[in-house]
Length: 68
Image (cartoon, rainbow, N blue to C red; front, top):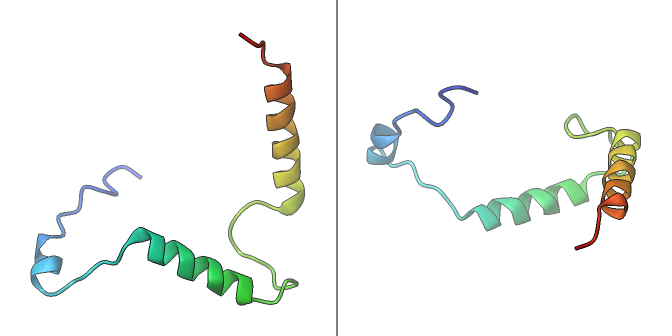
């Protein structure tokens, strides 16, 4: 990850590269993902069982935190 954001993109923008608002990318990606069959295996992200376990641990951590 070192240097990931250290690339000078000046020439790319000078050559016509354009960007779009992040919200547009997020909305379109979500719509695309929701259009896929539910049984189609996702190749990225957490395994649903692992996600459920992490969420359980996160919520139990919050419940055990002292109140001030």
